[in-house]
Length: 431
Image (cartoon, rainbow, N blue to C red; front, side, top):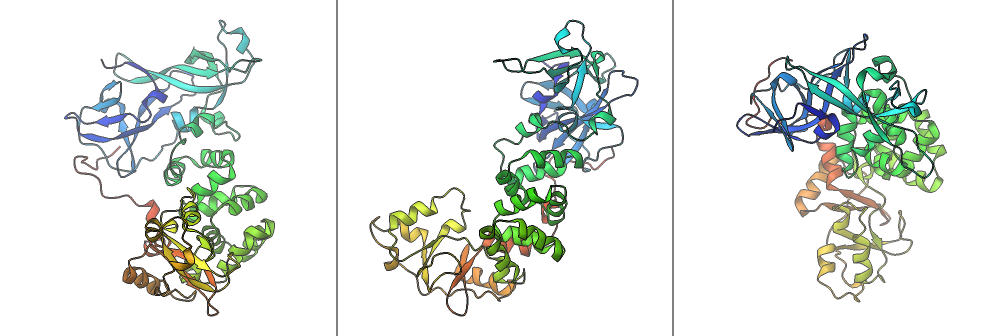
């Protein structure tokens, strides 16, 4: 049965279907217009994410039914124009939820003159088929030994929820962060870019260093610089420390030299040193593309130990495809480079065997000054996803992976582009 009352948080992630059951996308948010006269805000429509990750606007009048597990439209033709927020509009989940408000409900005297936070918005359909915000779920203060209680009150009994109040800094992000749990860093980065700048910065500040570093690495260069610039300098240095050295070097290479040096000076010397080495190379060479932290082993390492190293979940599949064997020291720049062992080879050998007896000495290595075109041909020639970078004295400096090569071959704005729309979602239209 179609619902005429629903909470916005329950809409998030629901499949959006056309009249013939064709899949269009998934609900990501609701667009609300809060009025200054405190009348019930109208819900203009839903933000729907297509399979290509583009977000579009679907007016509420296009919605036939909201049912458990799905939202059905009365047309399969929707505007594919990227959603753009208009003045006076607010996003229910991205902006209104987590806002600090006060409640005037006489039946809840414990909440009088107490700051509470919005947890959800209850929307309902009127006789004219318009959708409006009728109820607000708020999270009360914590009592000793108890979880904070959620109360549902009428819209008219909530104060402090205006575009101006929502736009003030320092808004909570608890509910917003919960939407990112379990997502890959690349998906979080995409969601982050869709947020208004204020909320984007608040989320970034709330993420821990490791998580934020993973997300920043997946953002376009301009967004990386912008986000880093909104952090306190000490925090920015901490995030750079948590990033992969090659990604940190790419980011710092985009900053003015004095700013980059200031951040490097704040980093732990052990973390900044490999970044400085990478910055010494041109970004479009093997030395600029490489990571200084591949899997490096001594020849006395057993196959069992080598396999344990490549099982590290923090390694990318490309880096886990190969181990490099060197004379001590095993930190880059290493002692004499002996060769590599493919992980497939390790899987075929007895666990007690030593990697020193399995080394592939025939695979040529990249030199740090080789340009991107030469690196690309190298990967294509040898069917590799990872390759060693060795200097003139035969020291291993690092390894280039295929994802770094692709990142530099694709247009600079590749993370911002959409794939062509899927068949069955038609019409450009106008909002």
